[in-house]
Length: 139
Image (tube, rainbow, N blue to C red; front, side, top):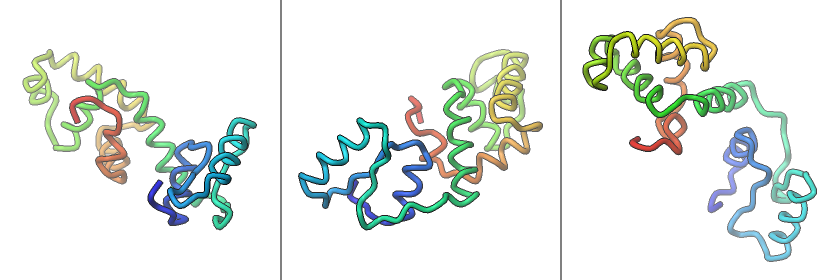
């Protein structure tokens, strides 16, 4: 990575990275990092002190993992919920039945482990759009 800030390294590790190699690393560091990760260890630059992740980064990483379980259509529905759209409006936009939208909303709530669409929107709003729609086609 071109970044070497401890916060970014911590976030990468909290999202499941097996290591973090800055662009400034020497060739010998790169080889050591690869060996380390291949042996099942976590590699970080020598200058980085591994710290226990704070609760906020753990919560964010957990929510990102839950979001990864949503289908592309469920992510579209979630985005429309964030825009304050009603089920009927979502159904019209996606050209599906309102019952289908309700089924998507139910699955979104289950997968995100929340109890209401409002709670889903609040939890997801804590993330930025890059985290929310990373690796999803159409966003």
